[in-house]
Length: 307
Image 1: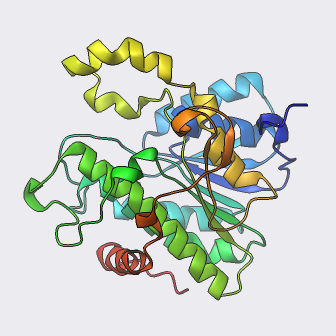
Image 2: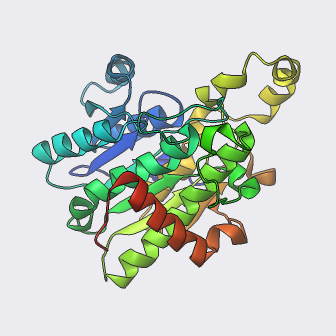
């Protein structure tokens, strides 16, 4: 008997409304495809509308009845996030799942439109703002979920509240900033779950990570000489995007999932495999850091949750 959790385990999603950020490529694309195949109405929130429409067309070739709407969302721009939330609320009256999937990884030091270090700005602050702007609709949808995609890199993450945004590039390294942003994803998830539970909400917050998956996240360092040398070894270790998407998909739709859980691959080192419950680091469960990050995030984004 096969006990692995696969796309065959996805329940009927007819009548569900699901938002996937970064739905035009990688694990986001796979999630949009599987959710829409199972009958959900999926909003693919993309920075590049053209790429989003191309991805949608690709899915419609195989599943002509798929309900997918592509909407513009740039997580590096608070104005774009607000416009997305307003536009969404004008068309939809519920959110069953918000899958905060989009992200950038180990890019050179750059700033978002609002002056945030881009990795924390995109991976955490953008999704924090988006979730906060949609939280009323999420809470009013029974048994809804917020799912945040983290990474194994959270294990090397450290919250540096004295220089959270690496001002003027001070102390910046690609991996340090990425690790911090992925740790922030988990601190946010667990704090959000505590607040939802305290408010007696039926909504839950869950996290997942894709292991090592073949996506375009690493585009910023693919030309480095060491990466070129190591690429054959990397390709032997990596799993395809459809497998990498499974932990996030499971966290989004498995009826047995509970708030505050974390899903990842079941293989060696959680690098590849089928989605199971996994553990995150003690640092990700630091309640004081979580509260501090929440306060800073509200201040930086200007978005308050009211829970």
